[in-house]
Length: 128
Image (cartoon, rainbow, N blue to C red):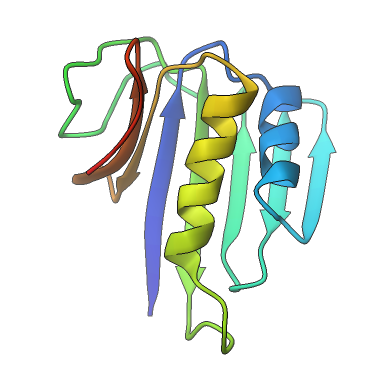
């Protein structure tokens, strides 16, 4: 069984900024090539992003009052049990915090677009 989460961000989250945020959040392996990013975390969680593969629509159902053109969409996959001492939720929080620290991008991190977990707006980073 796996869980799918998504980060939808405006154009201030560039590939370079995302790679920097992932490095700061503790990713154990990061592959940044042109407009694509692949990252792996100690919990087994994986993140992939393609800045060129977006249709610009914000799909999160709970938009938290945000409305922006999506320029970066990241897919996060949590699959299987976590190794002892590792936490995907902790890693997700670190990713959201790191993105907020690295750039001023508005973004939404949601579970299957249905439930918003973290979002960044003009007031800063928020957690549901």
